[in-house]
Length: 307
Ligand code: PSU
Ligand code: MN
Image (cartoon, rainbow, N blue to C red; front, side, top):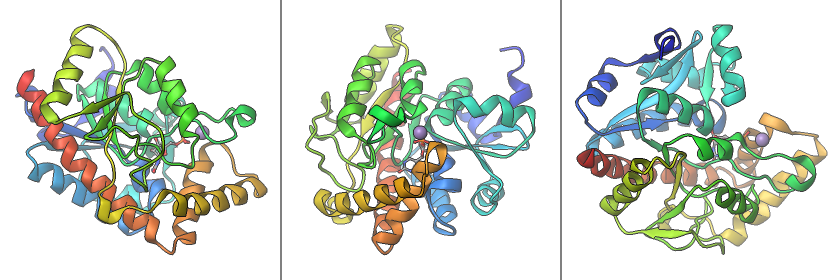
């Protein structure tokens, strides 16, 4: 792409790994700037990178500094995104403005998928994906993450979708978009904080090799678009669905009465749920991202071995 270098900078370690066919795992930065409080946001982001390395892959945390998309942030840059409150939450629609105006940005699942795809990274680990919000039949609030999964060929490993969303409608959208929803060693769609949601995934994944075979079949065939790999939170860290659901209802009612909408909604809900659960939701959030990092690195390894 003619102008790619003007907008995108790949860290040397990541570039070397990509060129030599080593496994690379992309990581998002909205979770750092808008998804978790300081200082756990920075601590977790750096720990996740270590976990990915320990499991045999190279981490590439993606964010925007001074209008440049960085594929592979330095420790200092991760700290900056986690500390500053001038970081724009960047999804597909925000990208051109933040780049042209040379601002700083944290990329969402959609934003990170775009950057990973431009850099040639196929595997991306996060906590939870955006989806169809509850009440979307009147608010029309559907995350751009779903549209990105439809068109951008990157596999996203997440702990399912959070029940701040309407999980049934989210699955329907993904089906329409042709996005496979695959449960990692589970037949049930995990609901982020809890292992259970009452909804089934489309197919169950047995192990990293099985996962890599499916990704290879999809993309070798030219079937564009992503895959959602849903990996349940470890049992020890789970919050029961009925328990967390009540807290979520409370946060949703507050958001409505305060008129919170648009890109502010997800960060508002995450923060309120943390307060309402006295920090327990944050512990669970950290545990599930770490667990996703282990699985994501293994999938990246299995996928790299085939390509
Ligand atoms: N879910 C989480 N933590 C997060 C997000 C979602 O548990 O940090 C972030 C991700 O970056 C996701 C974004 O892409 O929120 C979705 O925001 P929206 O609903 O505004 O599209
Ligand atoms: Mn939204």
